[in-house]
Image (cartoon, rainbow over all chains, first blue to last red; front, side):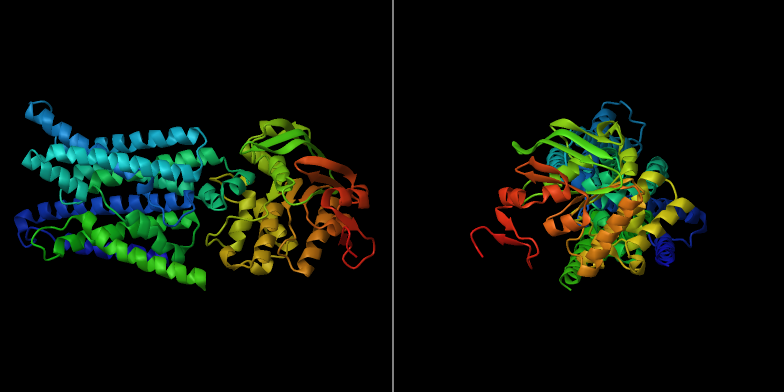
Length: 324
Length: 252
C-alpha cells in the first residue's frame, strides 16, 4: 500500500511538473519542444531524488544512525567540488579554443564522478585499514570540510568571469533548470546500477543493524559489506549531484519519513525511498518554479526550507516515541 | 567441539586473556565462570572469532577457526551476545531469519529448509507468539529469547551464550536451562558465560573458572565450583544447603 501511494504521488507530481514552466503549451509548433524540455527536467528530478533517497537509506543502515545522510561520507562535497572544477577547467579550455564544442553539461557528470570517487578512495583506504564506523564518520566529516573549502576556492576563482561565476554558483546551490536529456542519459545508468546494488545489499545491511560484531557472528563479511555499500552510495550521490548540483536533506529526510510506514528492512525501504525521493525532489522543483520570487528559487534552498522543518518534526516525533 | 589453546587477548595495552585454554565437548554444557572483569565475555568473543587474538588458537571440530570464512564460521558457531545493539524497527521473524544468513547468503531467498529452521527455532525459544511484534518494542527478556531463537535458527552445532538467562523471568530462565540440556542431549556443544554458581552447578557439565584473565580451575563443574576455589576467587564462603548458598568471609 505505501508503494502505491508513493507511485501515485510521483505520477501526480510528474504530471504537474509537465504542465508548469516557461513556454506556452497552447503553441502547437513549440508544444513538443516545451514538453520534451520539461520531461527531461522531471526525469532528472526523479533520478536525482531517487538516487539520494536510496543512498540515504543505505548510509543510515550502514551507520545504524537514522540521522546519517550521504553527505556525511564526504562524497556529496567531493562530487560537488569535482563538478565545480570541471566547469572552471572547461571554461578555461574553451576560452583557449580547446574543446569549445563540448557542452559543459556533457563533462559535468564526469567531474562529479571523479570528485565522488576521489573522496571514496580516501574513505575506502581507511576501510581497508580497519577503520570502525565512528572513525569513518569523522573521516567523512574531514573530507566534507576539505572539499567544501576547495569548492569555495574554485567559486572565488570562477566569479572573476560573470557567466562562469553564475554557472558555478547555480550548480553549487543546486537546481534542475539546465537539465537536458544529455544529463539524463549520462546519469541514468549510474542511478540504475546503484539502485540495483542498494536492493541487493539490503540483506547484509539488515543484519548489520545489529552491530558489526553480531553481523560478523551471523556470517556477514563486515569489511566487504562496508566497502561495497560505501562505493554504491558514492555512485548514487555522484549521479544525483551531476544532475542537480548540491541538494540537501533528501537523503536525510526521505528514509526517515518512510521507515515508520515500510519498516527498517532495506529490501522494502530502498524501493520506497526511490519513489519517495523522486516524488519529494520533483515536488520541490515544482515549488522552486512557482514561488513568487521573480527568479527561479535554487532547488537546494527549497529542499532545505522544506526538509529542515520536516526533519525537526520527525525528530520530535522520534523523541516522543522513545520517551513513551 | 570447540577448543582454545594459549589464548592471549590484549586491549588498550592490557592483557585481558593470558594463556587461556578451554575444552568444550559435544553433548555438554560448559560454563565460563569468574568474577566481574575476569575476561569471561572476552573469552566467549574470542571463541566466536569476533576478536583479534594476540596469540594462541581456537579450533572448531578440529579446524582452525582463523581459516574459516565468515559464513562457514557462522554455520558452525552461533553466538548470543550479552546485550544486542539492534534497535531497528524489524519484525521478530525477520530477526530470527537473520540466523539463516550464512545459509542463504546476502542475495538468496529462504528455502523451505530455511523456513523450517526459522519456525522450529521460534517454537523452541518460545517466541512464536511474538511473531507479529517489532523487535525494538519487546521487553529485554523477550528480546533475549528472540536472540536465542536466532542462534538456534543457524543450526550451528556449537552455541556460545553470554549470560543467556539475564533479564529472563524465572519460568523462562528455567525453560532456557532445560533447553540447553535438551540441545546438549542432541549432541550440541554449548558454552555459557554465567555469573550464578548455583546455576552452573545445576545446569552445566563442565566449567572453566577465570580470574584476572587466567584459568584458575577447569574440569567437571562439581570439581570447579568448590568451597576452596570459590573462596580463592570470589573471597566468599560456599555454604552448602544454605538459603543463599554463600556468605561473605568473616560474616555470619
